[in-house]
Amino acid sequence: MSKMKRTIFNSLILILGIMLLGCRDIDLRSSTVINENGSGIVKLQVVYDDFISTKLKNDVIDHEWAKENGYNFNKYFKDNMNIEEITYEFKDIKELEEKINSSGLATMTDLKRARGKDDVYTIDVKFNKSAIDNLIKNNTDDQKVYSYIKNIKFINEVEVPGNVIGCNAEEDVDENTRVWNYKLSQIDDDTKLDLAYKIKKHAFPISVLPNN
Image (cartoon, rainbow, N blue to C red; front, side, top):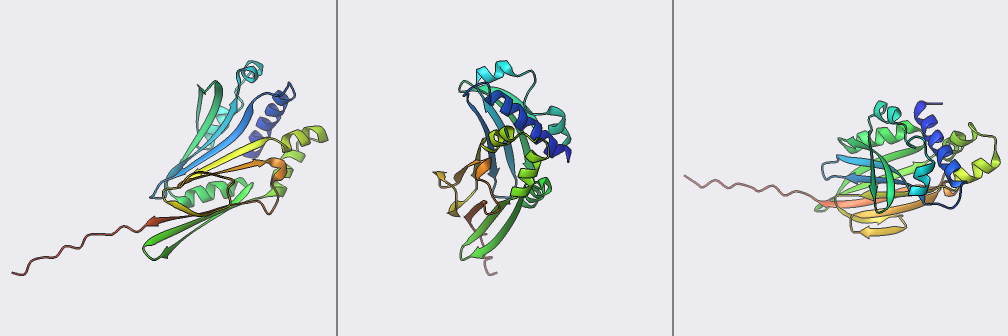
């Protein structure tokens, strides 16, 4: 198993141990912001309350793993919640696509096409159920542990630079932002993140030189 997958699993096990202490607040969150030039940033967060914080001996996210994989680690307190956050900046959509595809946990494709005065961008992410299941099952034979992990809630938010014109998200934040909510148990091979948005083509001014 790759170090990336092993680190993800170890984080899930730690979260599970905390959950077994009682019904406390903890979420896994992902936020992706895409700029008009295709660059952007991905934020992955573990958010938990003070009760959980007192039970932790170390941070949930492995700092060394984050650094080795090009992520920046940050930890802060906001709205009475502790937030561990790793961020990854990408220079274009293709780089983001390669990062997601290399994880083995999902497959991303993107497409750009012209439509009248607009450029239309389509992003599709398809989850790999067998890879996610294997990530868990290869490290535990305990059905109770497996069941708890499968029911961890994951919140995924994507913000794009243009107006969203097609999407399968559950929540519309505004004309540029959509949110998906999953439990790991809900993810199967048909689970997809579909998003299409449009941006006005840039019109370049035409200079007309005077006749001599």
